[in-house]
Structures are given as structure tokens and as C-alpha cells.
Image (cartoon, rainbow, N blue to C red; front, top):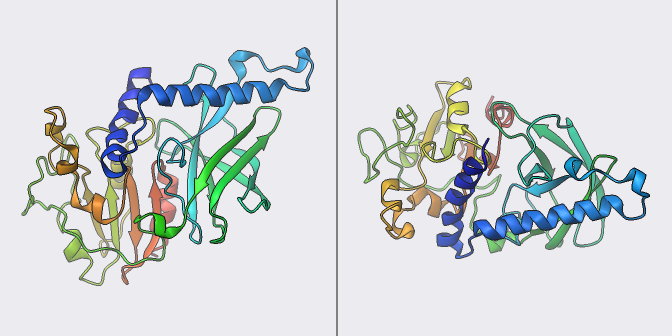
Length: 320
């Protein structure tokens, strides 16, 4: 993965935050923020230790949030519902580490109330170019505020902070809620989308609209992604993973694009006018997003930002 690939992926995601919540993260701010995390990691690994125990600069690694942490972008993590927070491991060069990673990272999650609990972040890498470490948690509704993830081991010493908000502060659909009816384009009705699918060859998940799927009493799988723009780093080739996974013919599988006419982005068209209705209806300010709902239209799983084939498979297993 090149620096250019990483920058392109992150820059593409930024407009969603800018237009939907007016809070984008410029590339310069992102690099500066990564540098701060690096300094914290470097300093914490050296304080109180002799020089012979110091970590060489080339070996320094640090965790960085692969989600909206509430500081660089408005948080999407809420209290009272199951949440997932993917973290990437970076090196001293400011790039994600993809080789020689541990299978898991242990740490301590300190809640706004001051209570703490041991956590284990497992590595996920099946079918994606950049592995991530997943923090899964659910905290009570009074714990609104800043959480701290503390990691202290021989390889990594760091404190990462992120904000958790009340459910009323976001319109993002949550696990356990009912799916929201909205039209998505199909092969027989493009609904103004051009192209219908940004994959090099349109995928087969455009045979039924989300509105019709939610009215037929069948389980529904919804993937919101832009394969033509996001193939590496944070997003990953998630549409390709969904194509590869086994699916029950009794399920309705739908792929929805983020922009109605992505070619107009380069023309300077107002991005707000190009955002897909499904993005607005489901309260998203990011992509990709993978939602699995049962025949009762209740959300059983929602995967955001970064997810691998293993997580997608487990989400689909909830339907069996």
C-alpha cells in the first residue's frame, strides 16, 4: 500500500463528514493527529526507563482509531447498545502496519464514570489488505463522555481516547432497531443513479429495492459502499467479500452506493445534492456500512468503517 493509496481512501471518506455534519478532517490535520499519537506512545515507552530499555524509534507502534472518535470527527458510538470500534496499528513512518502483528491486544477500558474493565482487541484481517484490532463494548446510558483505552505491554504503551454519546445525539440506526424504508435503485429503475454500481462490473445486488425488500417478510442484507472509490486501507474490498460469502436464496441482498452521480464530484457539484437517500435515511456520515436484519426487519448486526470477511460471515450467521 502506498502513501497515495492511503491518502485517496481517507480523502474520499472526508466529504461525507463535511457535508452531513460540517466537520471534516483535512489531510494535514490527520497527519498532525497521527504525529501526536506517535509522540505520546514514544514518550510513554521511555519515561521511567533506562536508555537500554528504550524502544528504538523504528520499532515504535501506536494505535489509531479507525472510526469517528468524537475529536477529529463527530462520534457515532452510543451508550446502551452494542458498539464496535476498530483500531489500526501504525508505525513510526505514519503508515498502517500490515505484517508481523499480534493476534490480539489486551488493555483496559476506562469509562467516563471512572469504572474500568479489562478488554481484548482481536486482530481481523480476512480478505482485507490492512488488519485492524476490534474493541467491542456496551456501556450503560449514564456513561456519556470520554472513554480511555489503556494499553501497556512490552510492545505497546499508549492511551487512546474517544467519545461516547447519547443515542439521541445521532440518527444512526442501531442494533435492535427497525430497518427504515427508503428507495434504492435497481436494474429496472435506476432512480437517477449513474452509474447504478461503481464496481468495474455491476454486482448482482440491485435486483430489488430496499423498500420492496422490507415489505416481503424476508431477511435483508444491506451493504452501503462505493467499490469504485474504496478498495484499500480503511474501507477494503467489502463488496467483493460479500459476493464471495455463501448466502441463502431466501435472503434479499442489496448493495447501495453512497453518491447518486459520483462523476460529478470532480465537476465541483454540491456533494449534498449527490448523497444517496439511504445515507441520509440511515443517519450515516461514513462508509462502508454492512447491516443484517431478520425477517421482522429488526437489525441484528451493523458493521461500520472497517470490517473483514470473518465479521461479515458472523453477522450473516445470525440469520440461521
